[in-house]
Length: 436
Image 1 (tube, rainbow, N blue to C red):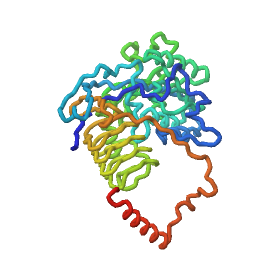
Image 2: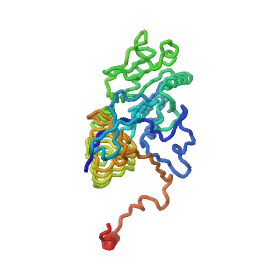
Image 3: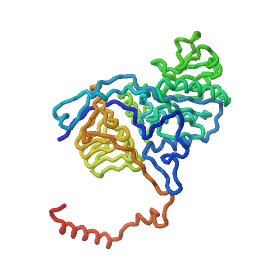
Image 4: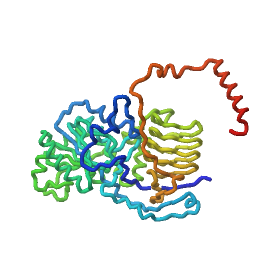
């Protein structure tokens, strides 16, 4: 029997570690830094750290820095229910669980959710590095950060949501001490394609202490500030409030692609727009056939069907007879059960989908489904339907042994060898006839 399940809200509190202070990762953290014999390859966003570090060679052309906040949650609300077992699906029974509240001290923003292996936060870091910004400060929940500090990317983990803006003020003061006066402050809730050099020229041409950034619908919670003038002014409150400024600044109005990510439906729209080339995001991995991208370490059974356009992330497994289609994206470390259909849906990292399920027009985040048609959240409590896959670690040897050369390992068998294997197969089938 095929069970139709319709779907969840994105939940925070997914950190593999508990960060208890507002600091970055320790330099002796074994999950980040390799030992002498092994190269550590955590099954997280594979291209993110490489992309961030690869853009770090450009010399900054201006004393310009950025403060990126990644804790602003989606603003739209969805109803919530729970399913306790597969029998509940058949009977149409739904329960309201007492623990379905998503109000955490520092909720996870959709800007911290991965799309094709990278979150909006990580993509914004790469944009800033390409623009030559001198330094970057990231202030976000530990659940939304999957990379470690580098020379010019600093990380702060607030204990409470109200601590974020006090950290921003301290960061502005530190940038001033380092001779950096112009700072981009971005409270990341939306995906914004912005030309930072052009934005800086606009800010300087207007000669204003703060330049808010808007699109056609209004403010985007992005600001460019002159730190010295902003902090010395009595009206320099954080977050900046344009309505309280005596002489309202002239906003920079963008005409580029913007997705406000106010609802999980917007996350799906971002994925579809990326597949269709409407924004600058492109799927990573290897395009095994037109419109089908598969990351390294993904495993797709030979009887599974990947129908373009679709994306399969690193360490994700698609089991026999499963079908992935209609702009679906399976992020890293997911598992799609035998015979299941994933259509017009997003599976976020570490999500298990059981056998014979039909998941359509949905966002699936571990044990939570968001049904985008019905605008309802369903929390599944039966692990045979959907469940959480713990993050995995892969240790890859840092050297290739003398006899481990791929050329030696992939040598083809000659005709005699193939004939021997065929006869051995037939003999084994006779011996174990009726048992296999």
